[in-house]
Image (cartoon, protein in one colour):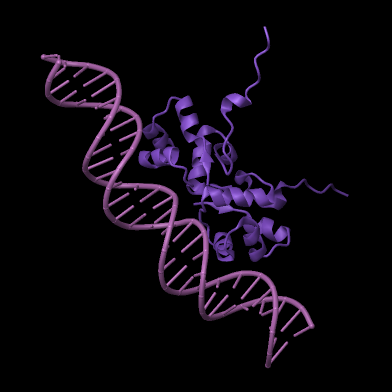
Length: 79
Length: 79
DNA sequence: ACCTTTTGTTTTGTATAAGCAATATTTAAT
DNA sequence: ATTAAATATTGCTTATACAAAACAAAAGGT
Protein backbone atom coordinates (compact mmCIF):
# COMPACT_ATOMS: atom_id res chain seq x y z
CA UNK A 1 0.00 0.00 0.00
CA UNK A 2 1.30 3.37 -1.03
CA UNK A 3 0.47 6.95 -0.19
CA UNK A 4 1.06 10.12 -2.17
CA UNK A 5 0.64 13.86 -2.02
CA UNK A 6 -0.03 14.50 -5.70
CA UNK A 7 -3.47 16.05 -5.23
CA UNK A 8 -2.16 18.25 -2.44
CA UNK A 9 0.74 19.70 -4.36
CA UNK A 10 -1.18 19.96 -7.60
CA UNK A 11 -4.03 21.98 -6.13
CA UNK A 12 -1.61 24.05 -4.09
CA UNK A 13 -0.08 25.19 -7.35
CA UNK A 14 -3.44 25.77 -8.97
CA UNK A 15 -2.96 23.12 -11.63
CA UNK A 16 -5.72 21.07 -13.21
CA UNK A 17 -5.16 17.35 -13.75
CA UNK A 18 -4.79 18.07 -17.44
CA UNK A 19 -2.15 20.73 -16.90
CA UNK A 20 -0.15 18.50 -14.58
CA UNK A 21 -0.57 15.62 -17.00
CA UNK A 22 0.94 17.72 -19.78
CA UNK A 23 3.87 18.73 -17.60
CA UNK A 24 4.77 15.15 -16.71
CA UNK A 25 3.73 13.61 -20.04
CA UNK A 26 1.01 11.41 -18.59
CA UNK A 27 -2.69 11.10 -19.24
CA UNK A 28 -5.06 13.14 -17.10
CA UNK A 29 -6.92 9.91 -16.32
CA UNK A 30 -3.75 8.43 -14.88
CA UNK A 31 -3.30 11.47 -12.65
CA UNK A 32 -6.89 11.14 -11.52
CA UNK A 33 -6.53 7.46 -10.80
CA UNK A 34 -3.33 8.17 -8.94
CA UNK A 35 -4.97 10.80 -6.79
CA UNK A 36 -8.14 9.01 -5.83
CA UNK A 37 -7.14 5.36 -5.53
CA UNK A 38 -3.93 4.53 -3.72
CA UNK A 39 -1.90 2.82 -6.36
CA UNK A 40 1.72 2.51 -7.18
CA UNK A 41 2.94 4.03 -10.45
CA UNK A 42 6.29 3.17 -11.97
CA UNK A 43 9.34 4.92 -10.52
CA UNK A 44 9.73 6.53 -13.89
CA UNK A 45 6.41 8.32 -13.47
CA UNK A 46 7.25 9.06 -9.86
CA UNK A 47 10.55 10.64 -10.87
CA UNK A 48 8.89 12.78 -13.53
CA UNK A 49 6.27 13.93 -11.03
CA UNK A 50 8.89 14.70 -8.42
CA UNK A 51 10.79 16.69 -11.03
CA UNK A 52 7.95 19.07 -11.89
CA UNK A 53 7.22 19.65 -8.21
CA UNK A 54 10.92 20.07 -7.57
CA UNK A 55 10.71 17.49 -4.79
CA UNK A 56 12.28 14.15 -4.03
CA UNK A 57 10.28 11.02 -4.78
CA UNK A 58 10.31 10.34 -1.06
CA UNK A 59 8.50 13.62 -0.41
CA UNK A 60 5.75 12.67 -2.86
CA UNK A 61 5.34 8.96 -2.20
CA UNK A 62 5.54 6.97 1.00
CA UNK A 63 4.93 3.50 2.36
CA UNK A 64 3.44 5.05 5.46
CA UNK A 65 0.61 7.60 5.52
CA UNK A 66 1.81 11.19 5.34
CA UNK A 67 1.20 13.43 8.34
CA UNK A 68 -0.97 16.48 7.62
CA UNK A 69 1.16 19.24 6.13
CA UNK A 70 -0.27 21.63 8.71
CA UNK A 71 1.20 19.50 11.49
CA UNK A 72 4.64 20.07 10.04
CA UNK A 73 4.48 23.83 10.24
CA UNK A 74 5.77 25.74 13.20
CA UNK A 75 3.33 26.51 15.95
CA UNK A 76 1.78 29.92 16.42
CA UNK A 77 3.24 31.88 19.32
CA UNK A 78 0.95 32.64 22.25
CA UNK A 79 -0.27 36.24 22.21
CA UNK B 1 14.07 4.93 -19.83
CA UNK B 2 15.29 4.48 -16.32
CA UNK B 3 18.61 3.82 -14.65
CA UNK B 4 19.39 2.26 -11.30
CA UNK B 5 22.25 1.40 -9.02
CA UNK B 6 20.79 -1.74 -7.47
CA UNK B 7 23.56 -4.08 -8.61
CA UNK B 8 26.20 -1.63 -7.45
CA UNK B 9 24.89 -1.21 -3.94
CA UNK B 10 23.92 -4.84 -3.58
CA UNK B 11 27.36 -6.19 -4.44
CA UNK B 12 29.02 -3.47 -2.41
CA UNK B 13 27.24 -4.88 0.61
CA UNK B 14 28.04 -8.45 -0.31
CA UNK B 15 24.45 -9.48 -0.80
CA UNK B 16 23.21 -12.11 -3.24
CA UNK B 17 20.09 -11.41 -5.27
CA UNK B 18 18.26 -13.88 -3.09
CA UNK B 19 19.35 -12.18 0.11
CA UNK B 20 18.34 -8.76 -1.16
CA UNK B 21 15.08 -10.21 -2.44
CA UNK B 22 14.27 -11.50 1.03
CA UNK B 23 15.05 -8.13 2.59
CA UNK B 24 12.71 -6.23 0.30
CA UNK B 25 10.12 -8.98 -0.07
CA UNK B 26 10.58 -9.45 -3.80
CA UNK B 27 11.50 -12.41 -5.96
CA UNK B 28 15.16 -12.94 -6.80
CA UNK B 29 14.15 -13.08 -10.46
CA UNK B 30 12.66 -9.62 -10.19
CA UNK B 31 15.89 -8.29 -8.70
CA UNK B 32 17.82 -9.92 -11.50
CA UNK B 33 15.56 -8.48 -14.15
CA UNK B 34 15.84 -5.10 -12.50
CA UNK B 35 19.61 -5.24 -12.54
CA UNK B 36 20.22 -6.43 -16.06
CA UNK B 37 17.48 -4.81 -18.11
CA UNK B 38 16.67 -1.18 -17.51
CA UNK B 39 13.10 -1.31 -16.41
CA UNK B 40 10.89 0.68 -14.14
CA UNK B 41 9.52 -1.03 -11.03
CA UNK B 42 6.63 0.37 -9.04
CA UNK B 43 7.43 3.18 -6.61
CA UNK B 44 6.40 0.81 -3.89
CA UNK B 45 9.27 -1.54 -4.78
CA UNK B 46 11.56 1.42 -5.23
CA UNK B 47 10.71 2.71 -1.76
CA UNK B 48 11.29 -0.71 -0.19
CA UNK B 49 14.66 -1.00 -1.96
CA UNK B 50 15.66 2.51 -0.91
CA UNK B 51 14.72 1.63 2.65
CA UNK B 52 17.02 -1.39 2.95
CA UNK B 53 19.90 0.57 1.45
CA UNK B 54 19.06 3.50 3.67
CA UNK B 55 19.02 5.76 0.65
CA UNK B 56 16.51 8.01 -1.06
CA UNK B 57 14.72 6.68 -4.11
CA UNK B 58 16.43 9.40 -6.10
CA UNK B 59 19.83 8.02 -5.14
CA UNK B 60 18.85 4.59 -6.43
CA UNK B 61 16.84 5.44 -9.55
CA UNK B 62 17.27 8.17 -12.11
CA UNK B 63 15.91 9.34 -15.44
CA UNK B 64 19.44 10.18 -16.51
CA UNK B 65 22.40 7.77 -16.44
CA UNK B 66 24.30 7.80 -13.17
CA UNK B 67 27.90 9.03 -13.19
CA UNK B 68 30.43 6.43 -12.09
CA UNK B 69 30.64 6.38 -8.33
CA UNK B 70 34.40 6.66 -8.60
CA UNK B 71 34.02 10.02 -10.33
CA UNK B 72 32.21 11.35 -7.29
CA UNK B 73 35.04 10.60 -4.91
CA UNK B 74 37.67 13.17 -4.10
CA UNK B 75 40.86 13.09 -6.11
CA UNK B 76 44.09 11.62 -4.81
CA UNK B 77 46.65 14.26 -3.78
CA UNK B 78 49.87 14.45 -5.78
CA UNK B 79 52.77 12.88 -3.90
C1' DA C 1 -34.28 31.43 -17.81
C1' DC C 2 -32.45 28.20 -21.67
C1' DC C 3 -29.04 26.30 -24.74
C1' DT C 4 -24.27 25.91 -26.25
C1' DT C 5 -19.51 25.63 -25.62
C1' DT C 6 -15.67 24.92 -22.90
C1' DT C 7 -13.07 22.91 -19.18
C1' DG C 8 -12.37 19.46 -15.75
C1' DT C 9 -13.07 14.90 -13.89
C1' DT C 10 -14.57 9.99 -13.99
C1' DT C 11 -15.63 5.54 -16.12
C1' DT C 12 -14.88 1.71 -19.29
C1' DG C 13 -12.20 -1.13 -22.04
C1' DT C 14 -7.71 -2.56 -23.71
C1' DA C 15 -2.48 -3.14 -24.48
C1' DT C 16 1.65 -3.41 -22.32
C1' DA C 17 4.73 -4.19 -18.65
C1' DA C 18 5.60 -5.56 -13.76
C1' DG C 19 6.15 -9.33 -10.74
C1' DC C 20 5.91 -14.18 -9.56
C1' DA C 21 6.41 -19.50 -9.79
C1' DA C 22 8.77 -23.01 -11.76
C1' DT C 23 12.37 -24.59 -14.44
C1' DA C 24 16.87 -24.36 -16.63
C1' DT C 25 21.51 -22.87 -16.64
C1' DT C 26 25.72 -21.27 -14.87
C1' DT C 27 29.25 -20.79 -11.32
C1' DA C 28 31.78 -22.12 -7.09
C1' DA C 29 33.37 -25.12 -3.79
C1' DT C 30 34.79 -29.45 -2.06
C1' DA D 1 32.82 -35.18 -10.90
C1' DT D 2 29.11 -33.86 -7.52
C1' DT D 3 26.83 -31.04 -4.84
C1' DA D 4 25.27 -26.55 -3.63
C1' DA D 5 24.57 -21.75 -4.45
C1' DA D 6 23.64 -18.07 -7.54
C1' DT D 7 21.79 -16.36 -11.70
C1' DA D 8 18.99 -16.60 -16.04
C1' DT D 9 14.91 -18.10 -18.83
C1' DT D 10 10.07 -19.20 -19.73
C1' DG D 11 5.30 -18.79 -19.13
C1' DC D 12 1.58 -16.75 -16.78
C1' DT D 13 -1.28 -13.41 -13.73
C1' DT D 14 -2.06 -9.00 -12.35
C1' DA D 15 -1.70 -4.10 -12.41
C1' DT D 16 -0.13 0.10 -14.77
C1' DA D 17 -1.03 3.44 -18.26
C1' DC D 18 -3.51 4.80 -22.14
C1' DA D 19 -7.51 5.99 -25.56
C1' DA D 20 -12.06 6.97 -26.02
C1' DA D 21 -16.21 8.06 -24.31
C1' DA D 22 -19.32 9.52 -20.54
C1' DC D 23 -20.32 12.72 -17.07
C1' DA D 24 -20.12 17.24 -14.36
C1' DA D 25 -19.49 21.94 -13.67
C1' DA D 26 -18.73 26.71 -15.29
C1' DA D 27 -18.88 30.38 -18.46
C1' DG D 28 -21.05 32.90 -22.46
C1' DG D 29 -24.54 34.18 -25.59
C1' DT D 30 -29.31 34.91 -27.11
